[in-house]
Length: 328
Image: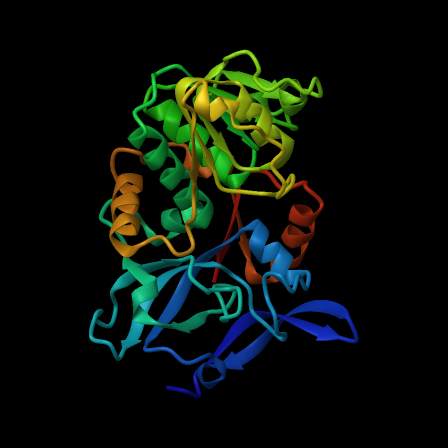
């Protein structure tokens, strides 16, 4: 089957310039692996946009096909784990980074990267969640495991993919959610997610230099890092918890130890890339059952492979909202 031809978005580098084009490839062009999947859906994440723009911190060598998410059907599995026709999800690991990803109609990967599609979840729905939804659900999973009080929970970067899902899942579970965003005009968008309290992220700014700030949040899901994260930690109530999964604002954290030693605040790191398999399967089961969101289509834009270039530019410019999924 090595001569099967398929479409893929390829990013090429010529004299330091990067171009994106939908081309025709063959399965023999794919990297080594024991599992071949025919991709039905993928999704666009910020890491994909960086890879598509030539960010060497994400993708070292070009030409390359991005797409850190993929959902589809098994074509061949030499490991014996899956049968032909099984429906699977792939997120994380090296997919779409230095291994050709979900912006192609076929992928070839190690079988251990895939998980079975849970019942009550379609391939399309799994990619509406994708890495963003999985990261959000993993953040909620670990935040609730910290046994925080059922007070007000802050979500930063709330209009992004991870923030949107985290806000919606927490609202579905009955928590009071405060969504912090630079897009506060999107009130209807957040109300549809079940979130009633929306604040401008500027309200979280503080340049007083104080070691601690007034207690506001029983828990925080931070998706952006930087000063928003440090101020959120300083504002977290006694015995509260904060999860951290992103650094789009900054990778630097200007902080002191007082929130941890005087208020007992916990800082929980979230890694959805190398997350161990059992936990990965448990979180996907939550997504497909108790935590499944009713309004998935309301914050989803579906595009073709040929439409991706414009969507990538929107994301790099900070003009993307909700989720973009790709139907292959």
